[in-house]
Image 1 (cartoon, rainbow, N blue to C red):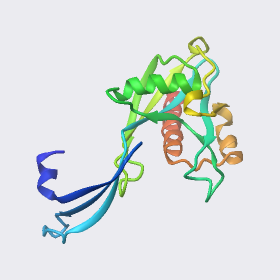
Image 2: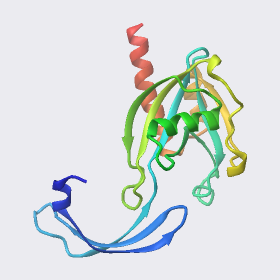
Image 3: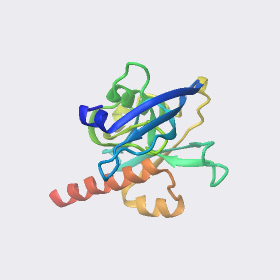
Length: 201
């Protein structure tokens, strides 16, 4: 946090409500308002999560993208529970985001990562969650396929791998509506890359 940010936010106190796979805190704080005045002391709840990574994985031999389909408990009550997403996961312990990227792409898709480019980072729900997601563009080839992928059995992951030809991407999205935010962002960013590639060719 920068000195400027520290001057604009004052944490009065915090209470740890849940200390498990993630942490939930109740904060009492005040912050500088648009007017320049301090806000009243307000109460906010914060779910603390590690940073995460996601990958737009492009097989340049086949000109296809890879997605994963798996059950998501946060979605099943309001939508279907099995979502089509980019390969993604949390940054563990002392890992760097790039190290986490290599691990997740191998675990979920079975590919060794060679060429990567950081596209962006963003907060998916900053009103309540501290998680920050790093998005990468990853190029792989058929020769980089070193395992079956599909997730880790001991983590009870049950992942279907979807291979989508780039020329069929729009049709795929019509038949398989994408309702995961990071995946929508990733597809948009990839279309920019693909458009630039075609224009340069």
